[in-house]
Image (cartoon, rainbow, N blue to C red):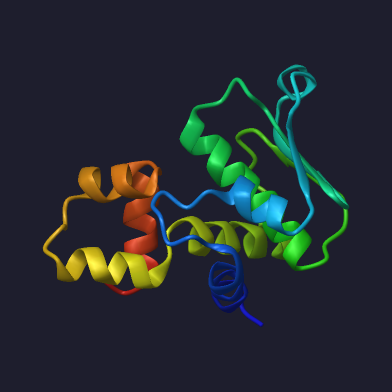
Length: 148
C-alpha cells in the first residue's frame, strides 16, 4: 500500500472530518500514547516512535509538532519499528520518505484540498492556515497532487 493509500485508510477510520487534522487524536484512537518529551530538545530531535508510544519535542512550532506526530504515526503504520526524527535531517532513507509522505497525506487530505480548491480557496497562506501547515508544506503537497 502506498503512503497516500494508507493515510487515506487511517483518515476513513479515525478522522472526524475537521481541519486541521489532529494526528494525536488518530494515534490515540489506535491506542498509541502521545507525549511531550523535553529531553528531545537536548538531543536535537523532533520526535520518536516506539511501539505504542510517540513522543515529540514541545519546543517546536505547533504545526511542526503536528507533522512530527503524523510522521511518527507513519512509522507505526508501516511497521518500521522504533524511529527517531532528527532535526534538520536530510535523511532520504526509504522509511523516512514513506513516513514523510504518509504524514503529508494524513494532515493534508487530498479530498479536503480538492474541496477547498473547488470552493475557490487557492492562496497558500489561507490553505496552509486551514490545514495547520507551513505555506511551503502546502506548496509541496499541491505540487505532488498535480495542482501546481
